[in-house]
Image (cartoon, rainbow, N blue to C red; front, side):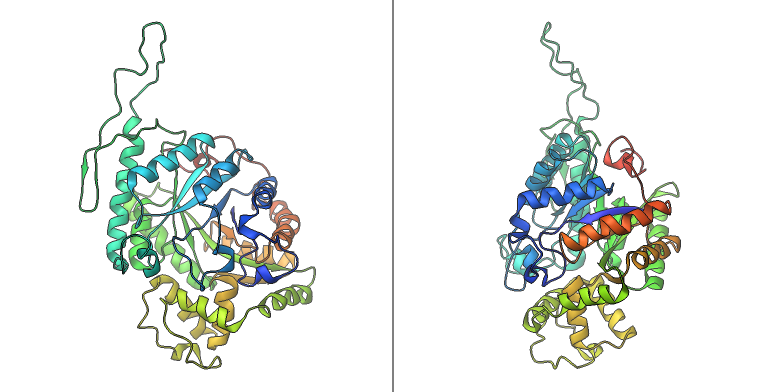
Length: 428
């Protein structure tokens, strides 16, 4: 079972910043962030993951309102850690392949082969307005662009594959006779000559991660992803999703291709069930309705929820006017329908845990739930999203991880090699 630490400043709960136990500067508290990652490394987490967005407004999660640029931040963290993987989110919609390829190759070099790229497309109109646009690219077209973008970065990363650095001072030969190759890419979205101006990195290219769960997103992931992040709240649906993804991966890349599927989990821990529930309710009660509705609206494509009664059944909400992430909307709809949730229920669930799987209970209950999902094939591991940092994260590390280790489910030490090798995936 693989474990990822989904890094946050205050915690993943929308109201975590209001809790008295959090770091007061949250995502801008560099020393606290570094210490949290070191805690994850001491617990032998496989990687730390950081999300990103390219816009900010009043609907933005407080933990994301102000934060460091992620590749710069991970570069600092790489010098403070030794083994843990460093996964950064970067958008193909508002980046250039050459620049991003260079950035990730640099991170892979300075971390000795621990870099990973969570590939996203940007589906928010506010982002487009920060990049000379007024409206975002249509959903399927974004994935077409992303496919070409990734193809270009791969060509750039491997433009140095045949080059040997002789650095012979006596005869003046710096590199072998083979020079880095121009890629001369001339595509629909990008024209890039190449080669990249940095030599091949330890992994060749970073570990490739993708988080799309829509039909187009799964199609994209099946072709390129080695790790897949997903938001799943129901075990049976998660099993079906995982089976479908593995089938598509094997169809696209052969039966020997491995892919690691990692749902996000939102564990709220207490020494007893009552204490865990009290911890959860204390956070839920900190959610201001107007804040929760704005955040839910952003997940649903910025539809207007202000005119609805909070007690209306969620399935009666008209979602047709939004332009949000389709897969996330479908998961929210299905979960609400299955459990007969009201708008208020969904608002608190999504605002609190961003639509991910909430587990409230003792350390044993958390471990049991994770083991069940793992045994059923719904997950190869989990992206752990602590609701409150550092308190709930420390509880997970101190109480849940040892149970998983005793059961032989997670590693007690790191394997040698690059991030890809540590995860047991094929070298590139």
